[in-house]
Amino acid sequence: MSETASRTSPRPFRDPASESFPARLALIAIAFVFLAAFLVLPLVSVFFEAFRKGADAFWEAIVEPDALSAIRLTLLVAAISVPLNLVFGVMAAWAIAKFEFKGKAFLITLIDLPFSISPVISGLVYVILFSSHSVLGPWLKSYGIEILFAVPGIVLATIFVTFPFVARELIPLMQDQGNGDEEAAISLGASGWQTFWYVTLPNIKWGLLYGVLLCNARAMGEFGAVSVVSGHIRGETNTMPLHVEILYNEYNIGAAFAVATLLAGLALVTLVLKTILEIRFGAGNAAGKH
Amino acid sequence: MEVKVSGITKQFDRFPALNDVSLDIRSGELIALLGPSGSGKTTLLRLIAGLEQPTEGHIFFGDEDASHRTVQERNVGFVFQHYALFRHMTVAENIAFGLKVRPSAKRPPKAEIRRRVSELLDMVHLSGLEKRYPTQLSGGQRQRVALARAVAIEPKVLLLDEPFGALDAKVRKELRRWLREFHDRTGHTTVFVTHDQEEALELADRVVVMSQGKIEQVGTADDVYDTPNSPFVFSFIGESSSLPVTIRDGHVLFQGESIGIDESGTGEGELFFRPEDVALTAEKDALYGKVTTCRRLAGTRIAEIDIANNGHEPYHLEIEVPLNAAVAVGAELRFRPTRWKVFGKK
Image 1 (tube, rainbow over the protein chains, first blue to last red):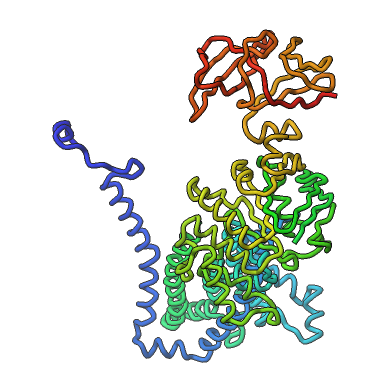
Image 2: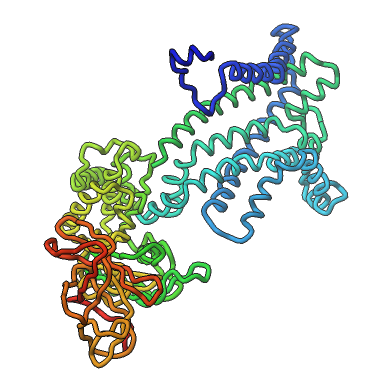
């Protein structure tokens, strides 16, 4: 702005912490272009490839028995591991947020462990634990229980990889809320369970849903750890991500992308739900402040 | 319900929060636990409620030893400092909570709960707000919801932790009067914690003055103000000044000279008196010092006085002087305490 202009009319007020208009425009543009190139474009191409040969070919790839089996297995694995992690996650978060005990910092580190090591390693751990050369593997086998290259192994690996989502989401939330409401509930005569159902759970429900959502997305999409323990038996131990990989390796690009659209669709649904939850969760949080 | 606290010690990580505390609370009494932060008053309240377990000692409800009873079994109404209202429940649901969670044999029927809730709402002057959520209420309203919720379970004792701490001065005053009326009407044995002496003195039948995990004095407002039994109570309640003195032959000596007041006992001690309990005098044997400031305070005048201390930092104290007295800044003033107490003598 020129000297004369500033003398005749005062400069419009600008928030001192914000940038000038061109700078803001540039930053926003870069962010959008980057997202478009690295996220939206691949997503669009997934759908494009899937439908390149028409809706019929797409449908065929989905209802093909191996694909259906992979979908069923993925749903089964998620249906087992998500509820278990929901329970474990709430318990761990409860313990960490509400009690003081020795080894608390260690427990928090342990919860983060699956985040910090490569999923392939997580899978390998189960291979070492349950392979025919291990102690546990043959012993379980003598009872007719197969862990490795079977559904139990896939479930175990998935639980391991997705464990932190619920706990991580709840710990800061529960720490922030403290014990006040629980103390009020028990002073009014509520039992431990009543306190949990009527007071604690409603207080954490949005955070919990959010954690479960992320946990579910990861459980269905997990590739590395599951790939190591599954054994890739078609129609038996293939989950959707593994099935996509097999199809792709067989140069069955159309079918691979068709199944991939289901996973991408799941991601989109998760994203939408997550956004809705964030709005609700945020509003709930703001309202929760006294 | 009488509450008897007997020889209670509470340690947190080896740091004692309460040290051998005993207290008898009479049935129907409104009692204040007053003390600075860290004096253990909230800990004592939480121990009575059962929210903490004592390291040593017992708590009796009536004749029954409640020390090892759970919070639920003790049936106390507890009003938390920040109310701890359930934010996902309406006002009515909050108040009904304690009745709703009762085991089915003891739970009143739904219609009865509704009736109790509306009765309580009426009692705390909140009728018409039953559908509101806690976030839609003012601080004073939340306070009263918390109280109604605590009273709904027909508690044996009502315990309030800094009940007015989070409210502004005007609402505080109103609620204070309201709580007194509420107590007189319902007759609950009530214990409340406060660090505000005005609140304690105005509201309570008896005040328990606490300091550093111990009870210093228990008494009515008159007792603790007029006859404090320790230097702490004297300086904590109201305004006071203190000077080191020696007692010899029944006379109080300050810096080796008589100040014209008599006291039994002997040896060194600490002389305490209140600003209003002094009289100006022309006589030689009195306290004297230089007036540093003089200010008008409502109906009286306060003079700040420095008393020389042999080259050390002078003793600084405040006294009340009559409005018509000629007091000039920089001038010397002679005065004697008319009511006083000497602690520490033999």
